[in-house]
Image 1 (spheres, one colour):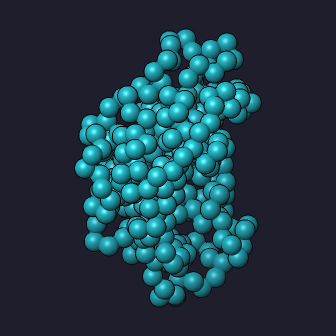
Image 2 (tube, one colour):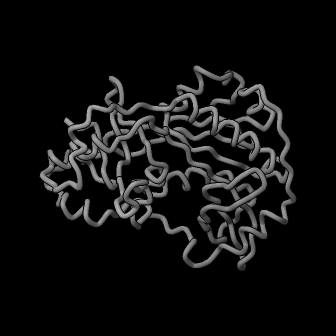
Length: 283
């Protein structure tokens, strides 16, 4: 049995799906466009693997950040951090905004009369794999009776989860970025799977993080589990909310860093990107 749990956003347990069509279209149901994860050797082919099984745990591991935007729930769960948002303001989801110290995956923005009134930064992180999931994907397609571009299903090369590098890299990045947000009195949210949070809590110093989260803190960690819906599909569910500040992230890592930016610079970057296409529409 293949270890690929979801392919192009669809449960691989559903045999009634027209898998030949799904694989041919290469459409991500979460981003509503072609899956951006492509093969390096064949950029015309999207891989489409959202979640996989790993080890003895029955719940799948999310390996694609886009999987986290299912139903827009992660954005809804950040509304309360827009502390100066008012009823009547429009909400916008602005992707990929560059700030000193790096790029932020999304901004949840409160807008009134086309002017930025408040914002929250949202960063997504899922597990990086070691090795390749491609042979597992190809074995799945063989099981589903879908034509394949190669015979990779015969490969015995395994894949793993790069727990240590994934965790350390995102914590270092958040340490740089949160100082920017803290300086302008705004919030930054890291969205992860509960499995990654559990690993971080074991391997780094997390005892000082507030649990449950305190709204006044500058950085929030929202962890989600993959729970079974009534349809049999997996669905994101809030598992934990923690928070701290820039010094708290530094304590996690034993690092010190500096990042400063004026509020006007962030607003200018956001102002140029909000439009009708970024307006948040609840599903």
